Length: 148
Image (tube, rainbow, N blue to C red; front, top):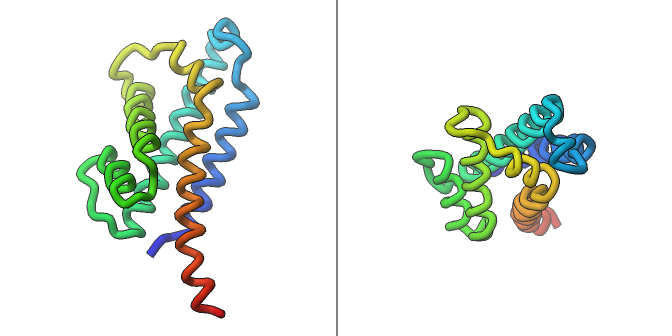
């Protein structure tokens, strides 16, 4: 059974982080170079991506789609069940990889990529959110019908 309240709370958190990101997003790559702006954008993107992962886990668990072996399996299971699109699955996997770079410093962080994500790729989060909300509304429909 889906934990709708936790999922909706996570969606609210995601929306809040996205609003913050829009407020601080620099107008140019030169503005992005300020250390405070860089770190704020990196951190907000990291938290946003972690929220996408959390929501994915709640969906996989609540829909009983099986135990994921690793985080990428979350997205595979959701796409396989038709919860998210193949396009969103690919985007979520890339987000997770980017988050790993931010958190674990596996490589040099490319300022151009962070800047692009902070200023031009926020629709990726919106697409994920839209697909999740669609699933939640579909899960609600049978409940409403039974109550009538």
